[in-house]
Image 1 (cartoon, rainbow, N blue to C red):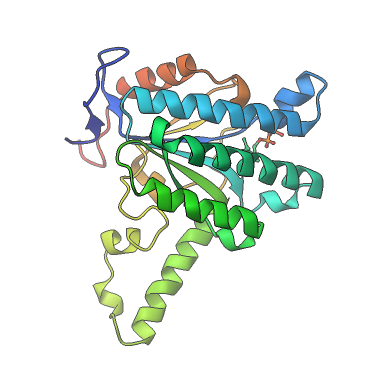
Image 2: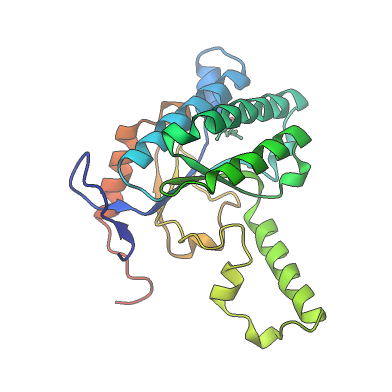
Length: 245
Ligand code: FPP
């Protein structure tokens, strides 16, 4: 099937990337522009995740990965962190309830141990339930950092070597990929960052090696399926050579 998923042609005949990743950025500025607290921006951002994930499922994408909470986001005020955790809880509870109907499977990338216990349990239940289904999957990055992910993978392999179960020279790129949170999932074809910031911010550092990037000034809560269409159309106009000619 190559890098494209041609399962469904709707709504327009065009290849849909198999895996799109998005940095959910601009919630705070969205709220500020409306004179609302930052937490209102996160609530709108969370609603928008639901809308975009549903759209991705409908057009036949296989994976959507979103950066919802980074290893650095703990530096925010306790109030803001707690509001984000509350929104995640709300989203997961609803997703669990509707999974049979919606068929949006969820997986989590990141070190979940630092999250509130209730959220950890909920994430585990959501992942467990997701495995009963097939098809579209959304990956939510929580307490996630690309460097942290790579260090953990390196440690895991080093531990195998120390235990005499592996030898350093046996490690391959594919083998290393299997030690990451994203094991078994193809690398993102397209990474989108809304809100005008032009950086990766520690998102999917290993997996982004050959991803195409798309930046837009639109703030995440305002990012519509039409904006996603624009990004995909732009992506489809590019020539991906993966280092070849
Ligand atoms: C970045 O915008 C956004 C976050 C750090 C939090 C994102 C979390 C959610 C949308 C809530 C739940 C998510 C899901 C997937 C249900 P920002 O606050 O950095 O915006 P700013 O740059 O404008 O301040």
